[in-house]
Length: 245
Ligand code: HEC
Image 1 (cartoon, rainbow, N blue to C red):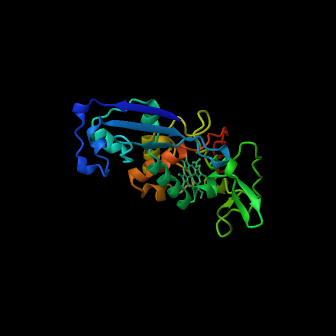
Image 2: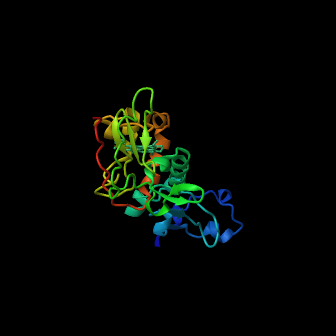
Image 3: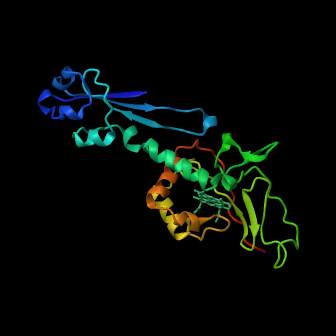
């Protein structure tokens, strides 16, 4: 929990009293005291959430009035906290989580655990991709051919065989060495817009639905990226694709 207290001299108190929905007259007259709380909530690893920032502001003596971050900026209050500067807005992360769940990213990018209802994403390793420790199962000869089957997947849907060879679902967690930590939000957007690794590299292979992601707005793609950034980083070096024989 980090608490920053910003006090401004009384002569700078230019808040419209009617805009402050508080009955407390003393609150209007008192020097504007804005308390900004950046509360870092390090959730449990199982929850898969790394960091969440909650901003709240209060005006005056017990006015109980919540100011948004934008309002603070409008008041000319500058906030110089590296944590606040870097953290994504909670709403953006929430939107990203919604899109990731709706977009079925876990289907291919999360290892699974077996339940009576079938395989479900393993919450302890969410979105960490094809697990490097897994042996690549042999592809039975003669099964994939025109007029036969055109694609196959392994038991947790993280590796896919088809005319493109074998592709392995990427580690989307913010691990520095093996995940998306080095990526910027712009590179993520470019990747989805171009269908190429980081917007400039090799074409991304099926069945990664880049075309579907390309249909999203920049804001939504950045929300997805913000959510991925909030995940627990998991070290897992996903193998490079194997070209077709
Ligand atoms: C049907 C399976 C499937 C689904 C669903 C899927 N992916 Fe993928 N994804 C893959 C595979 C396979 C790869 C690896 C492709 C390759 O190596 O070229 C991949 C690669 C990626 C990459 C890395 C691209 C790169 O340049 O290295 C990102 C980022 C990504 N997926 C994000 C997502 C997000 C976000 C979603 C959900 C909105 C999603 N994927 C849904 C299968 C899938």
